[in-house]
Length: 167
Image (tube, rainbow, N blue to C red; front, side):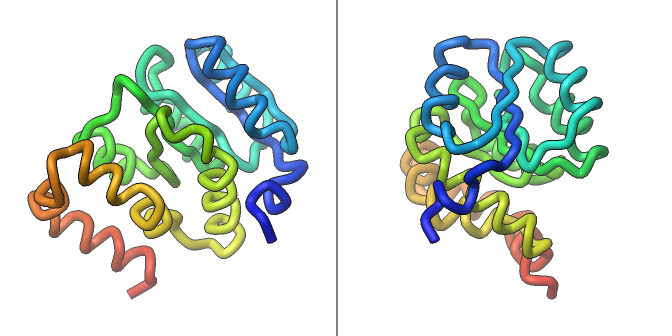
């Protein structure tokens, strides 16, 4: 089954302080039922009062990590999508704080695949982090100056992957 079919009809919240990003994501996810928010307060209200299959949260501009806390409490899987917040530290922080996925805005043309990974992992009650690295590992390696960024945090990522596999 294709990603777009897997997520057809899913309810998605997209939070970003840039209207053009919201519009682009709405186009890419046209098969979904979408709510959007341009601010932290608007997103907080929507997260606290609605159920979503996935929340797509920008990190910068809308307090994405604070919204992640709310999503986590509501058991809404969150996909962190960022441009200015793209860093090794935010990648690790996203994983530590319970995000289901971490993706760069420059790859948002694949957002249907990323959302599908989150939906599929949630359905199986597993983590999507292995898929994050399958799909985006080489991008992050290039972005962060080679594979040594993973080696610096080897213990953390090894533990994260063990948790994923249920070991």
